[in-house]
Image (cartoon, rainbow, N blue to C red):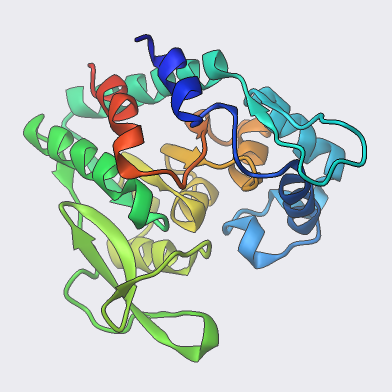
Length: 253
């Protein structure tokens, strides 16, 4: 099965499960500067709602549906998503060829950790240095509710952990802390990740390969602005096994 066919069959692309209403609501929250939607990126400061919709459209997202239907579902063009996966493959190939320094992190570990872990292993095998800043330090990031979280690496992939639980996080604070530990962008050749981990990296000017859901438009907006070219829009909350063909495609270098 071709990759675009798999994306549609598994509903990673095609008609996805997140309602259009959730996408448009988060687009408005982004331009209002809601920190759960900005992902640490500053593009919202001079963006309009129409800019955000255009950014999603450029990533293959169609938000049109029956007028007034609160359950209308958006569509991601599978061919556009497959092409974006190809761009990520080329990013990975370049950093592998140069044996670069890479950092992988996810705020969506329950679905995407195996995908990123396979990339970490492949890049390490190619001679890249897979970095693990702050892995041995407790309570480095303040999270919602006044709690302290720690960054922990699983098979080369950083995630935010609070009291032993992997946290689903949109915020950029953990990546910003890791970049501070590394001394900024100069020590990094590529970041691979999502949510605020990817947003903070793009904001810092680091080449970034990222996954964004249809209702997480901050990264597509950054791509519209020319700040990154590594965004793939897919449903980011399916069973981990659904992403295995995506993993195989990005590692085919």
